[in-house]
Amino acid sequence: MATEPITVHAIINGEKIKTEKTIQRENPTHPEEIVGYAPNNTKEETIQAIDAAFNAFKSGAWSDVNERIDRMKRAIQKLKDATDEIAELLSREHGKALYDAKGEIAISIMWMEFACDHVKKVVTPEMKEHENGKTIITFDPIGVVSAITPWNYPISLSTIKIAPALLTGNTMVLKPSPFAPLAVSRVTELIADEFPPGVLNLVNGGAEVGIELTSNPKVAKIAFTGGTNTAKHIMKAASETIKKMTLELGGNDAAIVLEDFDVNDERALRRMVISNFLTAGQICMIAKRVYVHRSIYDAFVEKYIEAANKWIRVGDPFHPDVTIGPVNNKNQVEYVKSLIEDAKNKGAKVIPLGKVLHPELMDNGYFLQPTLVLGADYHDPIVVEEQFGPTVPILPFDDEEQVIELHNESIYGLTSSVWGEEEHAIRVARRIEAGTTMINTAAVQGLDVRFPFGGVKQSGVGREYGEEGLKSYTETHVINIPKSLELPYIPE
Image 1 (spheres, rainbow, N blue to C red):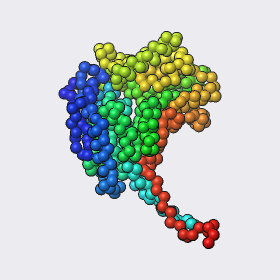
Image 2 (cartoon, helix red, strand yellow):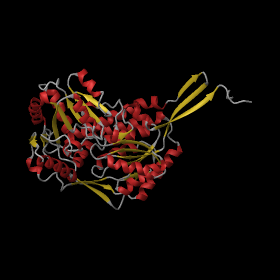
Image 3 (cartoon, rainbow, N blue to C red):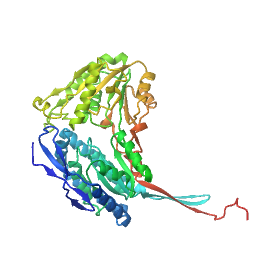
Image 4 (cartoon, rainbow, N blue to C red):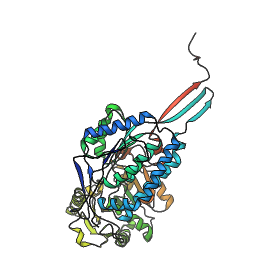
């Protein structure tokens, strides 16, 4: 459904800023089609956006939390009203199936509404009276927040930062990924229009923009979702001024299938397949490696393939029967192919899954038919690296000690899942090193925005979602009022 390319603009101090240079975004289904253009902002424009956010924060003109909630609720309604239009744009520029794009917007709205409902509780000062006097604890905004977001879930991974930052009284400069800048720019514009100029600013661009957003002394906090290697550079850039940080990074999330898992449970197997291949496997919290107890391994693989072949339908993201569209970009396609080829060359068996509904698109677009990899070694790249694409290895294990060791030896620890009898699965889950572990489900299916989300080890710093995610955009200020102003242990 080719349409005329759209153009989105930077937003600096409430004004749309046109730029000479632009970022061109193609349609991953039809790469010859240009979906639209985003600005390729300069370092100087980025500084202007930071200054606008800094001045808006210092003005204190919108310091009332009730006003902030009202403004955000109006923005949410505008997003609801524009869901179909934005979902279509997201699907065209990203490649995800239309139902998936609408689901991303629904998750974003769910979180924004939770944040509106809970922010007053989070920022309300606490008064404590005690034997030594009184103590007041306030939860104040931090200042200017730089938000840098990825291409895989561009809207939800931006609103997960925008909502808590603005509701707790901060200002923000947002930089989306050049691989999916269009729909998120539309969403950002809807929100920015409901707030005073300078409160929410938007820039696009490459390395020089990112460096300024992470090193500028007027930036007080960085909120980043993306790769672990990029985060290492961000931490170095931010170290000069000791910025606050929330980092949600890479993951190589494992699913552990215990011997008491029911291999005839079709609904559970469908949840497993979805947890491997939703959004063509391009989700940080998706199950990227599956360990199955050897006693049920053969039966599990047989039933898994049956479930995958029922659910996976590859093709045009706008077709109502399609569950998986193309991969977002050519580089990612080549990377996933290289992992699959490496596994083949080492003797693994690669099994194509599902149905290709539109074979005429496969060679032209950035498509990969989902695959199952059997017989890989525990330490092959396809197992230990984050594939971020539509392939998954399934490996046998012999006992719990072995599989827990295999899970925990990873440098990552974002999410995980354990599948089996509930109490047994919980016992195993308690020994897993991860920010979130789900029981008998995984990935987005097990996400609950009411509770904190984030990683351990090299999968991140801090937490998003839940009241903890809101509080991460505040500074705790303690005011002590002692009963006695004299210190009894100082001699007269």
